[in-house]
Length: 279
Image 1 (cartoon, helix red, strand yellow):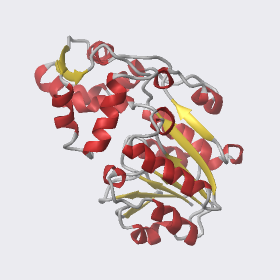
Image 2 (cartoon, one colour):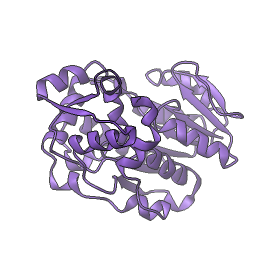
Image 3 (cartoon, helix red, strand yellow):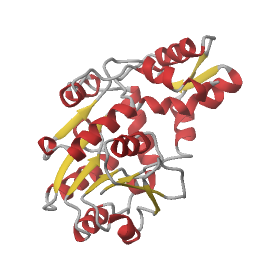
């Protein structure tokens, strides 16, 4: 059995489906009751209380670990989840980390994530670590304004990074959970191109077949919006990258191609598949 945390999110949902379609027994974990594919067991649990994961981890051979936003905050103890997995008999953990642990290693959230990576390496479990950059699905933050105002509001309109489709992350995660060849691997996951918020807006407009205006926010305005859904430290780290990406953050990684045997999907592909959210 494979346990997927964050199972109702942009990565966990396609990962759960892919594992189930591959004939695996899957337990989907999320904070609240949710619909899951046929044959998948759902367990409601809060990762901030690792002992609450016991029912989900019982009998599991592998765990996909995706931390919720509050587990990136100061004082959180996500390492306890790895300890609980080991005690429960889990043999393999695939951790969703972040590219920032190598591109900006001294940010507070990056230091904490690097420590979690080290905990996993030293746990005695089999492991793989995924380090994605920015997500294409972050564009869903713009969905309401596109629907109601035909507009996108974002900072740093002409500064781009190679954002990745969460569906690609899910496929890489499935490979790491199922294939022994990826044990001990650390994979940097990016999209196939550097793309700016203004260009993303154009791709959404093309998917819709109607114009979408781009309105540039100040950094302060963007942070105020972001901190409604994430810790201030994580918002600052994210804005640092979006506003002034360094050469390592602009690099297009070959790891999606290496693992999946195909190129990473471009943002336009994500926008076309998710266009209903913007209508």
